[in-house]
Length: 112
Length: 115
Image 1 (tube, rainbow over the protein chains, first blue to last red):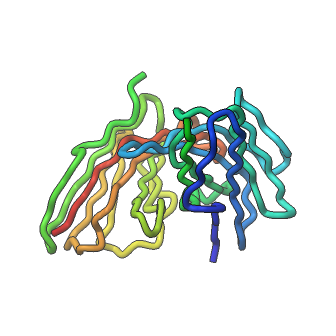
Image 2 (cartoon, rainbow over the protein chains, first blue to last red; image 1 turned 30 degrees about the vertical axis):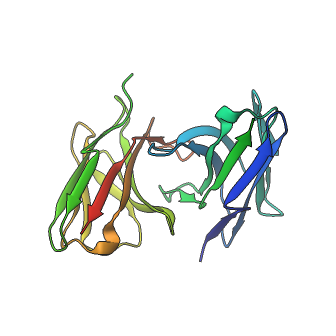
């Protein structure tokens, strides 16, 4: 069955450092991969989308890479801030399925 | 533009009862999806609607059902509630013709507790 794993349940880093989150998937060939941020008690918020034919996408301090050979996406937050503390989710989908498969998320805590 | 609105925000029900949750998508969005979020399983897909048609359904029992109205508003219903149905139910809408690459816009969910 399709499975998505995110590298760890929780990740603590010091303010100013780069946070790197991992999303690995098996038994699936996504056309699109998205990253979302979720704060406690709130719904996920879309951050970035990357297509299967793209290697890298950037938006301000965020960078996403997508390696379809390794079946892996890396999500980087540079110059991290305490306000970046949240749970980050990756989500995959393919045309015609009309559904997203979500990873279980990584809880990031940026320490001041 | 107003975001996705879900009502009610919290619900407490007893086993065996049924419940209806409501979702109003962002104006102009015609695709509405529902997800169940639990600590152990993460976000699990329930179903997706576009222009009142269900295009996909997740692996949930028939007690879970949904519908979409002509104004794109959606409801989901859970009958004969079980303790394991306690979860955060999230509704999401997306723009356009339901293109696969359209990001999901989530509401803040309905927290359902079954006792």
